[in-house]
Length: 363
Image 1 (cartoon, helix red, strand yellow):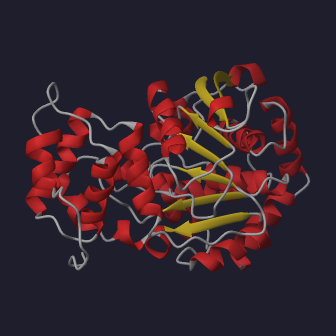
Image 2: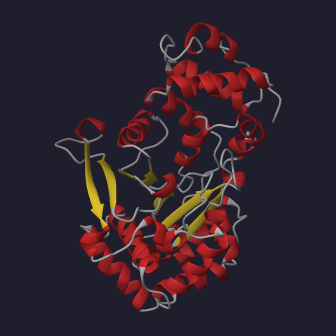
Image 3: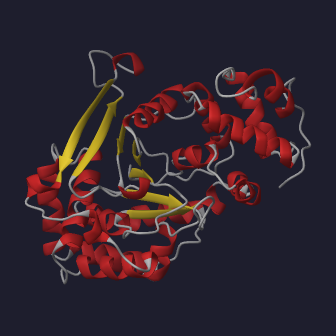
């Protein structure tokens, strides 16, 4: 990590621990926006002692971060992100960067299908980041022969040329990537695992993310509202498999926020609703065990290629279609999941989804 050379305020992490957030889960106070901003600026500058940094991250985990704190952390991070906006306005897919370990990653196939149906998609990840350090988007794309270690401007061009874009964390978010070793020593997730998925490196107006519990989806929405950097039109969060952005077989809860979905404009007129996706309602007979794989990266790539080529039906094809449908719906190109499913299946049947994959490989 870089050594600190900048000037800070009056709140080193040790003082925040002793006077604000480090007194235990019942008596700890929340940080003000100014305190949270200074704390993360110090962290990204490499200023805190490693022991103090670990204690601060753990204290935040125990007391649970507020949207105001997370909004400050997001803004400090975004001030250091290298943004590259494509001409298209894609759906930003912010899957957990520490990956999946049991079931196939469906977002590459689903993103290609959505792109073929006219909904550009952006995905972003690191390279087996802590804590789980399992397979993520990058590793599936690598197995498919798609270039992943791109500059942000190349990633933006990839969106415009293919409809699907991959942004690589070390290239667009080096300040957070520099925290790898410290995060690795922690052994548990910190708020960095949350905010890195909210970087939105393509400057998209729609974010599609995942959660374990509905209350966390509301917290992410409130974080975007608290962020002074982001100005999103729409956020969809859903209860994905393994916390990833893959719709679960059976029942999946989806939370939907629209910035101007109420009677007014902006956050005061925003709407927050939730709905369910029941795969059985679409004639899909599948369970999570049907989507299990042994080698997540390699098997996910093989499944992606077969489904996009129209050479595989059954649970994986159904799962890709419903995930593509959600992306198409999120992008506003379908009024319902059913309508998105029709568009997704047509994109597979007419070969255009396969063509997107080939364009990604040639890029």
